[in-house]
Length: 392
Image 1 (cartoon, rainbow, N blue to C red):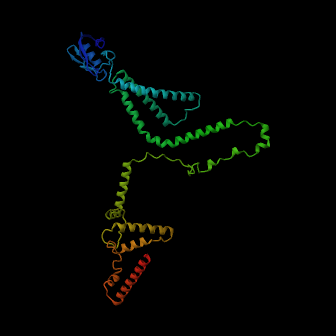
Image 2 (tube, one colour; image 1 turned 135 degrees about the horizontal axis):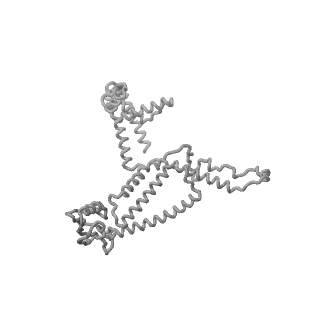
Image 3 (tube, rainbow, N blue to C red; image 1 turned 90 degrees about the vertical axis):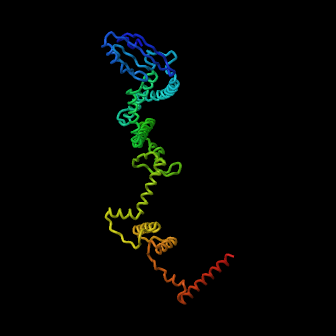
């Protein structure tokens, strides 16, 4: 405590003790000869950021009283003989151990890269500016993390420190540029493949022996060379697994991450609502009015049934295909039966009187009709009996 105010005043008395968490609690009274010295002490120490909370100095005449609670790790001013921050020590040890292992791996890789760059194996000029900026941001982020851990290890406070704001900003930038990474993934891979293939060609040329002037004139140099033949794997689209893979003539973009289950359900729900809206007659009339379409007059009364709506849409699609291909679309027996049923239905009101005579004949009006009906029944009965005999 005396070291704290040694430059501006003399320590009169103080009392200090430690709690269970290792923090010091106490008060002190410092006497100054002049009031200006007390004001200077307030101006100097009132904004000092110690571990945990900033100092609070109150002026009472020419006396200055320190705060009631001050953490212990204040450059040895309040030293606890039992150790510094026992509760945070195990966690800090684990973090430092993990950081040491990662740093050893990074150091080994960086040394290899730096040696190759110094030997001009990896030219660093005319590169992609986006990757260069991203690497600089990552380097700055690592430096900020190291400084943050250093302050925590020394027991200094990081509350309101600029390093925390820097870490948050860089992390936010790195999260925001992830879509750009996905868009540039294909182009970067393509450039790397081109560079690798060019290096392999240069190595192959260097490995080939040089041909002398006499060897050039030798007729045997003009014989067929199997090495000059184009391999089948280059032009053949079939790979070793006998799967056709189309050649890549145009650049393609990498798709985004797969949709989650909630997104799929939302997309399916939107499609269902869209389909229901198209089938709704009120919505259809509303859209026709907005687009200025002419009013359509149909033979049905009221809203059509779902079955009739599906049939009409399918029939329109068949007519469109017939007009495009100039050929009649065949109808199956089931479709013909459904069409006949819809024509007799109440929703369509088409062919409502079709078959009315047959219905009247069923009541027995007319001898010829009754005989015909009777004969028809007998014939059907005979066929039914024959069919049963065959089954037996």
